[in-house]
Amino acid sequence: MTKRALVSVSDKTGVVKFCRSLVKNGYEIVSTGGTYKKLVEAGIKAVEIDEVTKFPECFEGRVKTLNPFVHGGILYRRDKESHKDQAKELGVESIDLVCVNLYPFKQTIEKTDDFDEIIENIDIGGPAMVRSGAKNFDAVVVVTDVNDYDEVVDAIENEKNTKEFRRGYMIKAYEHTAAYDSMIANYMNTRFNDGFGEKQFVVGTKVMATRYGENPHQQGALYEFDTHFSKNFKTLKGEASFNNLNDLNGAVKIASAFGDDNAVCISKHGNPCGFAIKDNLLDAYVEALKCDPVSAFGGVVAVNGTLNKEMAEKMNEIFLEVVIAGYITEEAQEVFAKKKRIKLFEMGSDKLILANDKKDFKHIDGGFVYQDADKVGANEVKNARLVSKNSASEAEMKDLEIAYKVASLTKSNCVVYVKNSAMVAVGMGMTSRVDAAQCALKKAKDMGLDVSGAALASEAFFPFRDSIDAAAQAGVKNVIEPGGSIRDKEIIDAADEFGMSLYFSEIRHFLH
Image (tube, rainbow, N blue to C red; front, side, top):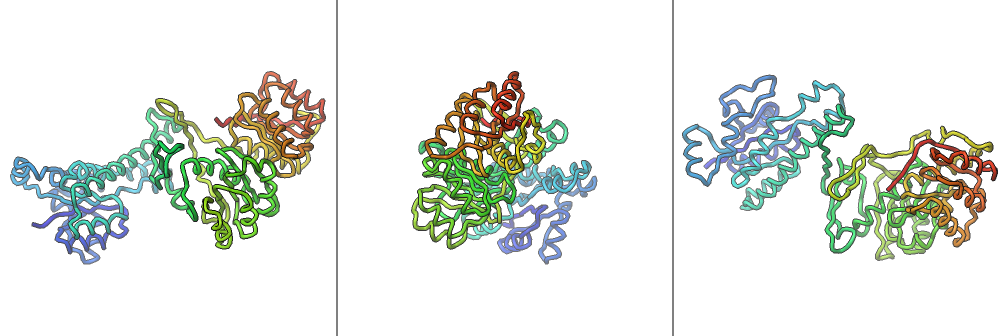
């Protein structure tokens, strides 16, 4: 008995080869519009959809497949005599395979703001056919991904087309239509409701399972928006764990926050414990390590550039768990090969790459809070308001910028001290800002680091002058913070009292 496959695809990659294989395996092809034309031009015999629907394609292609001869053929149950009898009575022939991918809505919104064109690229018949095929997976194979064609042909040719096989494709089909509708809803809410509609959909594609979650008794996996990790995250050695990925995220954000600068960030548990920008990456790493070599043990290093053999040899002097860079040369990989536990990743680019997500969210019990993503503006430090009598030099302003950007990406409450483009002290995640300031200075003292002349940044205002007093005692020369405290005048007076420069950015960067 001849089986029938309904093929209607927007992305025509591989469709000719796929249909040729289906025909070879006894399938009759039913097709629509551009897909039908492409198949016929390739010499594949196909039946045009209106021969099945007995109704012409109409309304400029808006209605093609929304027809009982299509959906009846997909949906009627082959295991029920009443369904088979009714199909025969109505002249409905079975459709045993549905191959559909949808109108390119994503590509359309990326290339145009023309709402009429966007509306016309919302697929109606496609999702309906996919959902019908998925619902009747007991008898129908539904294919939505061009990368699955070979596997489907193999299943047909080698008696692997089982109910369990079709069930897997059923799940994938509903994921496909759910993601498609979510994308449309999110776009409409972005266009008309500032991105905060009554429903918010967070959709990711699985990249890989992690060995476990934060702890061994938890399962975990990495999902991506679009193709960020698929395109920009290559494993060279080891396996990224759930915690590794979280720590990598923080380190990469900081190391890449300074454009093409030779920046290196060392992080532990998602927070920076070392950072520096120098003329070359090796020097940047050496300076970054000085900030807190104790915490750096077993930490994560993000290198904004190419990691070479010389740098690898230096890094290999201590135990590092994870290293990520734009590139890691083969010679550098050979150096790291001596360490069994180190994990190496690269982005396949001259510099580290960020996805620059526009939105951010955090899970809380019972739901999630959702917001615009935070980012330090390009001129935020440059345009900060000088509120003290003294001002910073150009080199000191660079230190202020580094301290300020690192602070914006460090868990609150936090303070960051930077000297000569290297972080010399950091206090983070404290319940009071003065504790953060004093903890950072204590650590710097323990490490034998001279903080005098450093720049100090806080991601939120100083509520009292005690943090300024502590900084002055350590020799801090320049300070930047958002301002906005009812005691701002006390802070300004303290800065002038100690001859410091003090800048208010007037923008807070909490990170919780």
